[in-house]
Length: 302
Image (cartoon, rainbow, N blue to C red; front, side, top):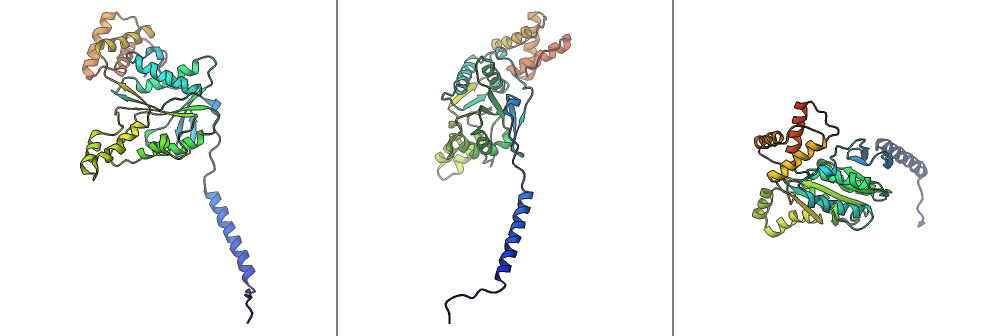
């Protein structure tokens, strides 16, 4: 009996049929898969919003921002973030920044104001600002991958960043910041704002500590997220004098001619009824004052 295997006469036909079938399946899968996102025109704007569902950047024609000169009571934080951003824009080493602390004290306003201030300097290559929403933070590695080889430098900005309960998306953020195999692209820096220094509620960390086999390690994992930000800037509740300085600064900037003593009394009452003194409270009072006196505010400082 010969050692050679005798092929079935129908074998070539079966191979051709299978190849044809696989080809049709591949074509069908290709038609079902979404087309690659179109290249983004980085010259279209200086600011973009990340759309995770479509993996695209949407240009923002007009950024809702406040002039740097109107940010009062946060001089040290302003100068520190501006210096860090300037170094990054020049291609020098710079840190990811976490702006944390009291609500309404200008954390997100400062990020947008610093971005505009750096871009306004003569001879400065355009610096792009990209906002990523908290709910889409798991797509951050995808965004980083798209920006890695782009011919520009980017601030990726997440406002009001925090994590609750069983939310594990913070692990994606940790990897994208420093822990991933590729690391953070050299042309990308991350700025985030939060009311929490460690981005996680205290009770969540305490629960981890009480239920874990090794409580210290459980809490350490959560705290290490904040450690990925080399620059921490704390924003604290302002004093009455700082609050009034913000109010007067807005009033002068927009040309409101109401007497100072009247502004002072109304602004203090406004803050008392809201239980807080902050830049946001000051701006809300100015909006009310301008509306009552028939002034139109040129620009939006909210």
